[in-house]
Length: 293
Image 1 (cartoon, rainbow, N blue to C red):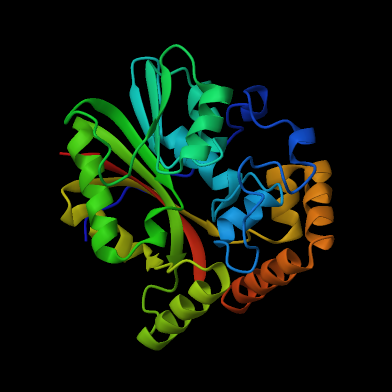
Image 2: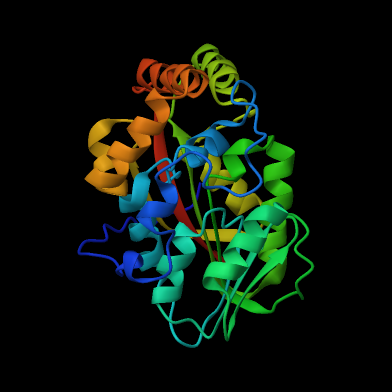
């Protein structure tokens, strides 16, 4: 393990609502995601289901940890920035508020890319269709790379491929930030870990593989990075207080209404929350910033 500088970032982040986030009225009904009307609510991956209900903050540590990560990443006007899997574009708006020299979002979902292009693309900002492990971007070409709630969804060898790609496209001294699902305490038993993996996968329909903070750091270090910052937060994605803090009261009420009027979605989301609550002593949210040597 390497020595890690622990920073606590305080104060308000950039006003991401001032950028072109989806308007509240666009999220008033569960058909706001174009092309998702044929989504099977019983089989849909958890993050897609929540997005369909109108939830725009889908990161395990909520907007609070996302803001901490973006502030610690210290995006500036001379930075060329890449976001891996920008999804709904919530964190993209935060990064763009920092006025980077360039911003590139790489996402594998063509529908998301089309929507992000329509909302956020402009001079110095673009969205590309591609995979986080194979971006197609030139090597040693960017200053900052970040991704959230993505590595967790992959097996360890796939995690390594994505981390390796971030390392490849970064300039020497560039920074890579991640915000992922964690396991705690550090000495969590193999039995508890296996149970959490199994029940998370069943609930969210994704083969989620969270790691302890030490394991996340080890992955980064093994791929050539030096961790300079880390922060942890409670994983309260579906708790009312966190939802109001992340989404606002009005949007939270709209999300609740969408869930209530769709029984299939309601059952799935209640199951997810039940699993999160059952394992709340052993799951959290973690964020890291690592530097390319």
